[in-house]
Image 1 (tube, one colour):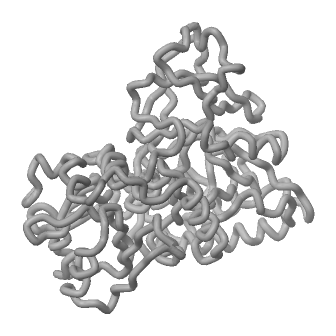
Image 2 (tube, helix red, strand yellow; image 1 turned 45 degrees about the vertical axis):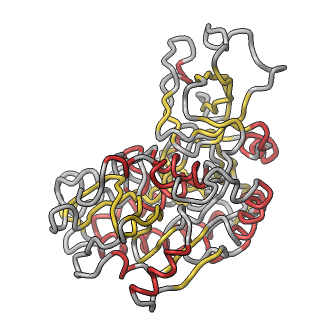
Image 3 (spheres, one colour; image 1 turned 180 degrees about the horizontal axis):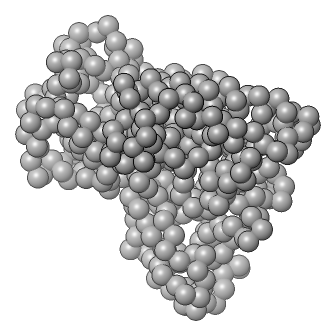
Length: 437
């Protein structure tokens, strides 16, 4: 791409521009305070799942699911002049009639307990309980509007309903909610045991900051073989006292030993030991939050495919930035709208001129989030008078001046133009420094 040299594709090029790039910008206690503030604000969509009600009215929730489904369908149909299924059928509101019925639990009661789930396979929330694709182009199978947010292995869920066909749970996550395939979730026996799985002491966590880590193949313990662990996955390390002499018939040397969640045949939660080689990009404890580490984590995904709502085992713009900061223990809101409302250091620049925005950027560090309607990017720095960002992008007027399906994690300057003729710099509405209150 124009202006992007090979050296600019290395994280060191950008973090070396910062003063003391290895210095810790926020320690774990400070990050914990930021997470608490974000979760306490109802406008961010982030929830402290430990405080969620333990019982609810299932009959009333069925009615709520109908409302949610209708709202989502209206949104899908508004995204393009014509929407299609993966079979090429034109969609209208009537096309969703059977799917809407599928939102209704057959086991709803006026007072019932929630269930406590743990994600066992990297998956995504969906807007409706169906595997039907919702496309704005007949053959663009890589962009399915049904998806609404990725969920990493070992993430907690509160399960509130089961679809009529028994295939999907309606679940609440930390920063998103929706329908999740039942086969990707294991149900814990009670709240206390569920909390022990994911609410891990920071000293006992192993954080994956590789873009995609695949566990080793084994024919002995198939449930831990070739498991996809996405960037930002947080697992519990196995203590020395608990560690077996062999794991999957292997001596656990030159490896980290971790607990991997598994789904038993009856759908209940179980766990199994697994080995992750020392050479993989993992951290014992959350990564220290520094300019150097932010850049290195972000660049681990440079060139990866774009994944709307977490599809294709990848990330969209907000999912990408959220997973970067998850490696440091920071829990961001789900999307551009919610992130703009977080009570962190931010600047409203919607009505600022380009020169005023440049003046802000000249004072702001690598890792700053730049947000506008429908997109967000991670600020890298300035070179030769241009301001550069890294981001996961679907479509853009790059690189030939025409609107293209870019569908990559890319580096570009903010002088790139949009279809409207405005530059990305012109579009920026909110500037966030998420690790400063």
